[in-house]
Image (cartoon, rainbow, N blue to C red; front, side):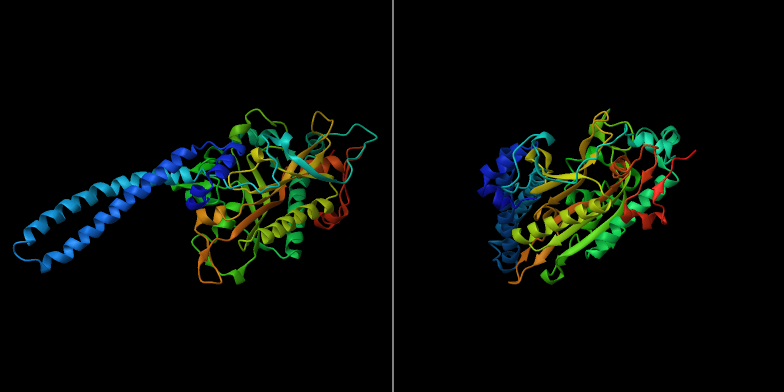
Length: 428
């Protein structure tokens, strides 16, 4: 959420962000609601002040003046009672529009519409050239009996699955490798709630525009999160932090849930796009300084790359264009892992991680304040990055390390987490 004073004085900049981020918002309607809100509120405050003034004058008034003051007091009271709902209504309109205002992309963010407009920064590792026809992850996991494909879909619906045997152990191993890497790098591990109130979804910017992607538990007015970013940021809602506490670096481990409402008929095969997954998410709170935030951003990105290096997966890093970054993001890098089985077996880089800077967007919405050195109140910046998300990460892990006989040679860093097993053999 941007400061309304900033919006008033930078309308061209905000209008460009709305256009380039493809946000459905009428800025003129917001500015009109802001003007009306201020006018009605000023009138209400003036009439309240007169009401209080009359109340103080009546006890001191003469017998001649008292009836007039009493009548005026009644009239002013009626005006106040009529203005209060009007103020509440225009405030509601104003607040609803403000929640749709996007943050301003950083200058380095390319203007574009979709992922084809993202700009590649670098490639790390070389995609493997197989001396045999490689299998995709569906074939490999079926061969190794890592997944029960059909059973869950009978009772849980499409895009459901159950990791079994080695598949379940592999997810746990990859997750623990990611956790240990982050602990070594100074992050605090958190296992947060995955059911949250609407306030948390609004505060982190996932509502109102992403409501259709969340699963709702209507009886309890709760929502299942699509990332532990939501509860990790919300841990400090309504808090006033001290700069000495910062940076706060969290790594959340949680199940995540996403309806994939906008992906009907897309990526229905295998485990690339599913409704439930396990994720380790990094979240940072830092002082409101662009240089500090940039440093934290690239440290987060480095953490994700370190995990991919341990898993020996080739990948590329791209900076996302304006049409691909979210409402609150000012900068986002996507990390795309090489998946030999994608693109009809031709292979493709596909997103497995994203690293985002959000400025004070989430802090403002979540009422997370910062006591500045001069005693004034500001807002901390927040950042986030995927450390690992499974089962998607299992796709490049299995496909890149397969052998001609269907076996899978595990990366050395993963072997200790798989009880010393170096090679996974197909199940008979």
